[in-house]
Every structure is written in structure tokens, then in C-alpha cells.
Image (tube, rainbow, N blue to C red; front, side, top):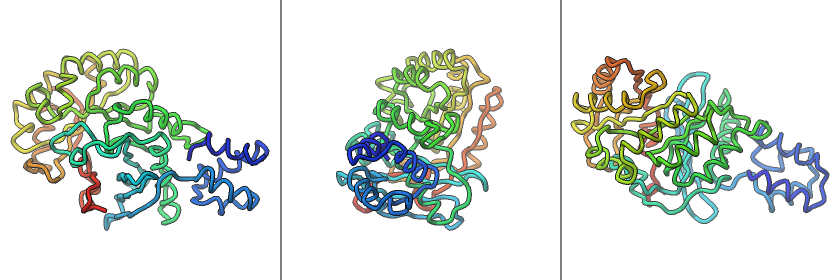
Length: 345
């Protein structure tokens, strides 16, 4: 929902100011999916709002669910005919997390990520980003899923820092205590390394978590796996991250997808250790290892034993290293698998 648009619509039809508070509570606190469910609103107000300020800017095309009920993936239609995927995850019995997209497709072209196969169509509007969270809150209510969705990761389709203004506006909506009310420290934004925006992000959102899609610690290898590295090589990225750490004194997360025989070798672990040490603030650095999820890309799959070996090597240097849960692999909703191609529609 675009809160400003809804408030303007209420004003246009001559409604008193308290009507917005009624709408706000119904949409954001009660997760209603239709104005017809807001009984306190007069019928003519419900009708006008539905026409002037729809609750959602996107519509459900399909939702796939893992048999164990721990992962859900939605294909959503946008007003202009575009489509995005978003994921709802339950990493523990009491926690729900959504992975949201920020663009239709992606221009970065990481060689192991399915989203890059789409190319880039356009950026999402702020409302289209935050509405993915609202969609899942409505879905949870409709399906009777216990718990509250209050963790958000910008790790879906697209490069969030390539559309920084839209992402920033959506973040302000999510952390607004009168709207979504999600704590800043319960939100993480991932970038493949748009170095100049890291400075902006540290100043604008010092309490929101930053994750860097690293995947290699030498320029030769990273430029091959993550083409963004050609524009912002590791030295430039490192300087931006050191500035970020000085500014925020917050924990910094690194994502590292393990590719068999390419970036999971002992020398790759040593290169990662050396590069991380160059950042300083070692106690604030945390590496998340991700077992490669199969996509239509020419990489060999890794397994948990590969991840554990790599984890031990990096941990031996004193770093915090975890192996991420790979929820949603069975529905194409795990890291690197989101894509909207004709066959997926």
C-alpha cells in the first residue's frame, strides 16, 4: 500500500482525518486483503478506496509450498505485466522471514544465479517492494499460519543498490512504527558490491543489516563469477566496507556461494581469510556459506560436507562462519533460484 496515496484518496472524497487511522490499522495491523473487510468504513468509502488506492500493487499468480511447510514461493503479477518472485521462510518454529525482490530481473549477471538469466526489465517501485511483505502477511492470515512475519531480507531478484532510492523509500515504510513496524535490525539488504551506495546506506540506515555477496576473494575469480567486480574491484569494495564499519560499528555479513572446484578450494579459503583481515574489525565480520542450489548454469553442485570443510578452514583463522539453511530448494525458492521465464508462468 502507498500510504500517501491512500491518505490523499480519503481527502479527495472528503473524509475526516481519523479515517486514515482506521484504514492503517486494518491494513497493517490486521492484514486485511480487501477494503470490504473494514466494517467501520462506510460502503462508499470502501468502494472509492478500492478504485483510487488498492491495498496491494501486485496480484498473486501462484504460490508453491514445500511439503514440510517451511518455505513458500509466490509468483506475483505487476500492473504493467511484469512478474517477480518472492519467498516466505520459517527457519525456526517461531520465526518467519520473507525474501523480497527489488527489480524485475537483474543486470549483474552472477554466473550461478538464475535471476540473471532474465536480464533487467525495470526497477520495482517502493510500494511494489514493501507490498511483497504485505502480501505474505495477508497470505499467512488467510492460510492460518501461526506467528508473525517480522524479518525481511532484500535477497530476491535484482540488485538493491542499483535502485537505491526505491529501496530506501521501501525501507522507510517497513521500519515506520505506524505502518509495518518492523525493527531495523530485523531487516537485511544484500548487495553484490555497488561500492558508492555502501557509504549512502551506512549513513541512511545504520541499524539495518548489510550483507555483501562476495563469492570470491581474488579479482580474477570474482570478476568471472560476479561481473560487478569489474566496476568495483575488491580493493574499492574493501575501502567502502572499512568506511562502513567505522561509521556504524555494526556486524557485516558476507554471502559466499560454494561452487565445486571453483571457489571452494583451500587456496580460496586462504584468499578469503587474507582479504577479510584487510578490513580490520574482525569481530564484526560474519561469513554465511551457501551450498550451491542447482540452476540452469554450468556449475557443479556442492554439498554440506564441502561447506563444512570450507567453514573449518576459515574458522581456524578466528572468523565467525555459518552454513546457511537451504530452505525452499524443492520449490525453486532457495538462494540463486528465483527466476521468471516463460516456462515458469
